[in-house]
Image 1: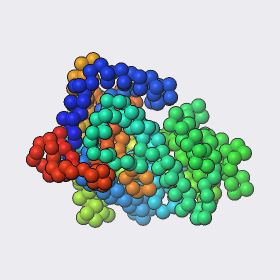
Image 2: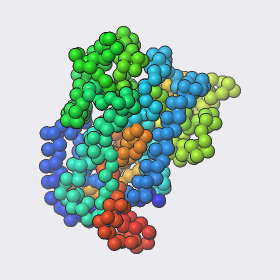
Image 3: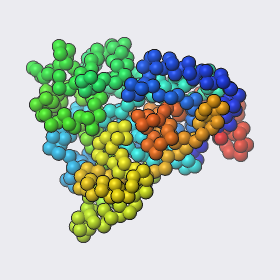
Image 4: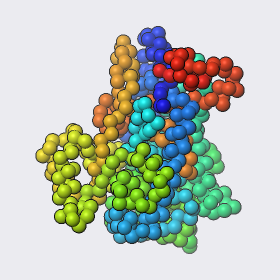
Amino acid sequence: MQRFLYEQDYRRMVASSGNRLDEEIKELEGRLENDGYVYRNKPFQLYPRVVILSSSDREWIRREAEQLIDILEKVIRLYEEDPATRQYFMLDEAASRLVRIDPGYQRKIRISRFDTYLVPGNESFKVLENNTDCPAGVIFTGRVNKVLRQIPSLSTYLENIPPLYEEGIHKPDAFINELVSVFAEFSPGSRLRSMAILQLENRVSLEVKEMVELLRKSGVEAVVTDPRQLSYREGKLYAGNQRIELIWNKINTADFIPLLDDSAALSDLIWACDDLAVCHVNSFQARFITESKLCLAYLSDPAFRKHFTDEECKILDKHIPWARKLSAVSPEDHEGQGMRKLFKLRRKKLVLKTAYDIRGEGVVIGLSTSQEQWEELIDQCWNKPFIVQELVAAPEIPVPTGPDHSLVHKKFSADLFMFGGSFQGFGSKLSDELKVNVFQGGSKQAIFSVDNSAAESRGSEQTACTSCRNCTNTGERCS
């Protein structure tokens, strides 16, 4: 059963810290702002909140997240093999051409993130979105977690519990190592020497600037460029005069799609990818098929369950919320009038999502919308690449706020980072809003898990829970 550990210890730490905790956070927030740890060029509020999961909870989350990413890889194969699947995703000719390009490596989703809500009291999480184009946080998540551990009061609290599992996401070289691994598969025997990170002109994020510095320190010459400024000549791709061997396409698919309207502007990039003259990460299959919100509806739709094994269906039922594409489901439905009426009636229980969006900007929560507006949106979006998804209630956690550190319940998410098909650890966002998003007034917290192997090597003699005295959570305490 999923539980948060050491909650009583955490609350005692908050209660005993007094004004010292406020001073520690203010000092750290100032350092963060000076060092550029901001979102959309705005500093974010830092809360002294960490969540501790048991090693067993981490293990089932790891196992089932890795099963899910394998299912997404299967969807990509189905798109290639099954005409009904291809039709379902509603890709236009420009996008269809891109997903036909062989990326030169087998696993198409290399760097990704599941945005989820943990379901308290159950071994379950619900996937709100698959981020398989170019997820944010692959560098900064580890930095934020490190920063939280540097708050003296939190540091003391963490030192008095068993050791924590050191996740891949805690180390910036995990992201770089995955890029190097992809290139080794793409060009066996070659060493990655130069690469480009794609960003729209004048929209370079701070995390990307940090990536460039880390890549250069690791021996990879990296540049940031707009894809329209690339040139393909004599079988090689260039950014200015620099040869480009690998591309990390850090332009969200929602922003990349408008660039396809000018095919000539992207022709050099596309030709180079088509000729396997450059390694493009993530693949266009990941960016247009599994990144699409339609993929969530596809995985939920009974019409396509025949493509999945019984075990895969169990995983989907457990972790994928109910969702449907905004279209007729059968000829007998008379252009979808039955489903359309149902979607309108269930406004308070549904969320409307466009196929590609960023920062939650393409998400409409029925509960926050008038009935009239909701019905208009359903009609406007019908037979277009939109889905309705079951509204999943965000879990809440007590967070110390205000001068008296009173505990206020805030909603939180759990982001599951995946590199090369393997689980790399957690990110997490806090919010008072229905949309739990840093870009819409949210903040960050850290989710860690206990490392049982490290606890054993440290000589822990605890054999039962010392908090409730009832469970068998060896070496750990529940809340």
